[in-house]
Length: 112
Image (tube, rainbow, N blue to C red):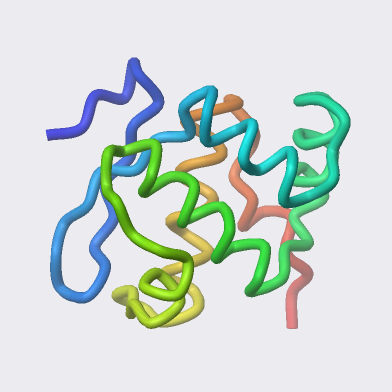
């Protein structure tokens, strides 16, 4: 069971429930991956709502590692989410909201 007070979220990937959390170590990993100098730069990047599939992969991978799961980025890239790409976007949105209290990232997506 996830603990939202610790920034944890649940995600269903490959038909299995996982706990994701952006721990301090996971955030440091993301700073490096996104060449951000600090958390403010990282938040600014995420708050645009324009994340690529690669960005989402990195965030979900870091969240899984922060949740205590030892998976490679390649393992995560092969996973499937309920709802496909929209499911991955929902997971990222929930994780960023739980971590930073950011508004729902789906609200930032342009309407087709």
